[in-house]
Image (cartoon, rainbow, N blue to C red; front, side, top):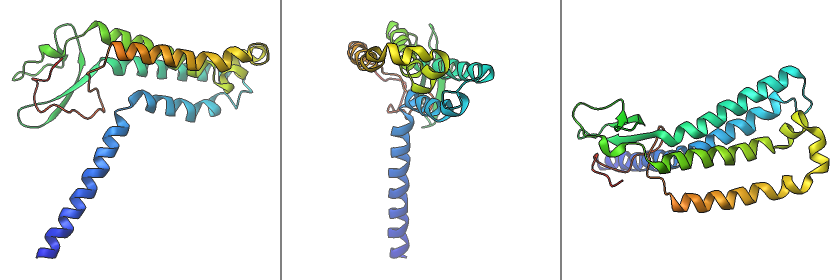
Length: 188
């Protein structure tokens, strides 16, 4: 019986570490969005050799991924008194859908949410619109004439966005994020 308990403890520890690592990966939801874009963009742009349908499909992908980056800035999660994690969308009154037993007014929209959404969209736009396949598909002459801009703009936008994110830290634990609070009394 002692061996079974030790094996169960080891299995539980491995599962906890795996889930913890997965939670940390999922916490980077915009990174997941960028991964989806990087995975699908070469297929939808036909590796930069676009036809009309490729342009439409790639445009839809860029639009959906941009929306995902923005939307994730307005989602949050909390752990109720029973230990169950709930997810919702931040509104000016609190979290929606609201709980009948928990006070969720501390989760209301803030100015920083809009700043994060805007800069997340800007970073994604620079990344997606200056992607080699996108450039070849939509504006092929830009690749040869504006090579300096293609090299310099992404790091500059990254530094500016990083500075803004430091000024407006994000306390949200959105959909897919692992909530660190044990109740709704988290500090916001």
